Length: 96
Image 1 (tube, rainbow, N blue to C red):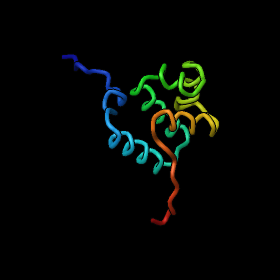
Image 2 (spheres, helix red, strand yellow; image 1 turned 45 degrees about the vertical axis):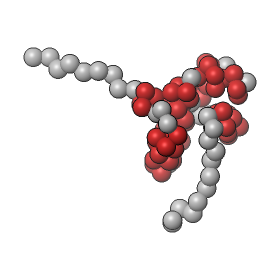
Image 3 (tube, rainbow, N blue to C red; image 1 turned 135 degrees about the vertical axis):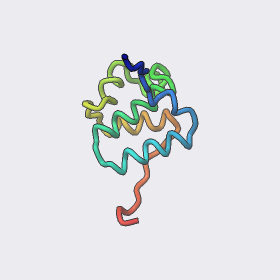
Image 4 (cartoon, one colour; image 1 turned 90 degrees about the horizontal axis):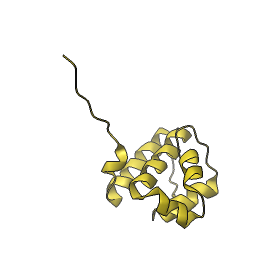
């Protein structure tokens, strides 16, 4: 008997600011740069990559590439995408 499965896409569950912030914060705690880029990409997809591309002045294709798990976006790309998403980076002591 075959097991029926469905594809799970995190972007479908990132509908409010609290969920988005919790998701990105959890990924930042992991510390893997590829996962951080991919998580920001998930949020951008949830909000609409075309809109984010327009607001950042970058192409959708370049954002998909940069914000993938294998991507390596520059800091200005990350800051621009976060700003377009209505988010900002913050820093706190690691020991907190």
